[in-house]
Image 1 (spheres, rainbow, N blue to C red):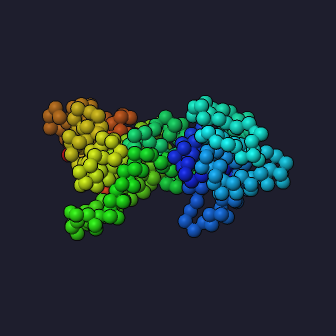
Image 2 (cartoon, helix red, strand yellow):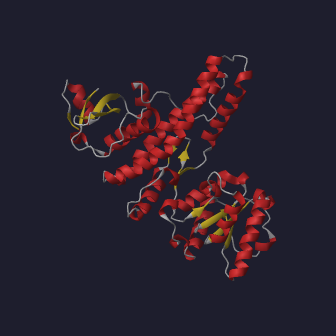
Image 3 (cartoon, one colour):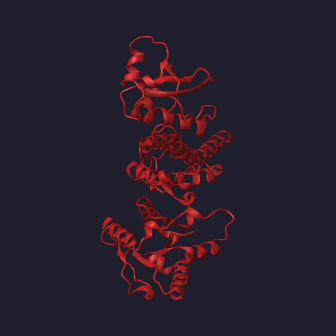
Length: 387
C-alpha cells in the first residue's frame, strides 16, 4: 500500500487516530494498521509489507512507543530500507515527552508536546515539501474518517472537504464503499460501549437477574452492533446518493444528521445498563430514545419548537417514506393551516428540509430499523402530504 505508514504503539490509539484523521482530512494518504487490516491477514506480514511499500513512515513517539517492541521492529525495517535505497523516508513525530530512539535522535522532528495544532502544521508543511500529498493511492483505499465531538456530533467541515477532494476521482463507474468510512475513536461513546458489554457479560450474576431482562439487554446489544454497521453503509449510501441527486454540497449536513440520529439512539440503548444499576450515564452526553417515534423527542433532537409527521411517496411505485419535518417550516405551516391534499415534493425543496430531515431519517430507517423504507435518490414526481 503506497502512502504514509504511521508506526505507533497500540496504547496510543486515540492520539494516533486523531493525527491520522487530520492528515487524511488534509489530503495525505495514511496507512494505519487498524484501518487497513482485514480478518485473516497475517499481521506481521502485512505490517512489514506496509513499511516496505510505503512512500513515507511517520514514527509516533511517546513513552509507550519507545518501549514497544513492535515500534522498534517497524523502525528497524524502515531504517534498513533507507540504507538500501540511500534515501530518508522516516519522519519522527513526538506526541508526548520521551527520549528519542538513538537511531533517529539526530533528525529534525515535528514536536507536538507544546501544542497539537502547531505540531500538525509543522508536519503537514514537511509532508507537502516532500510531495506526500501527490502520492497516488487507489480510490478504494482513499479513507474518509468520521470524527465525532461529544460522541454524537459529526464534524462537518473536514468531512465535507474530504468528500469534495475525492469527488473528482469517482470516474469509471467508481462508487464510495462502506470500507472507506472509518469511525475515529470517541472517549464518551467508547466508554459507554465498554460499560454496556461488561454489564452484559456479568448480568447472569446480577442480583436482579431474570431471563426476560437478559433477553432485553441481549436484544439491545444486537441493535447496537447493527447500528454501528449501518453508520458505515448509510454514510456510503449518502455519499453516492447525493452525487446522483447533484446535491453533493450538502453531504456533510445529511451525513451529520444521519449519524447523529444513530449515535443518539445507540447511546440511549447503552445508557439503559447504567440506569438499571441506578448510576448516571457514563458519557454525560444528553441523548433521547425514540427520535423516529415520538414528536416531543424529535423536536428536542432536531432543535426546533415542534415537528409534524409527513408521508413522502411515489404513487407509481407505491414507495413511501415517513419523516418528521419542522412544524414551523414552510411545509409544516402549509399542512397545519388547513387540511391539504398531497402536493409535489419539489414545492418544498430546500437544503434544510431535505438534508436535515428527509434524507437522514430515510437512510436511518432503511439501513438500521426498517429495510422496507426505500433509499431513494431521485424524487422526481414524488408527493408529500400529512401523515
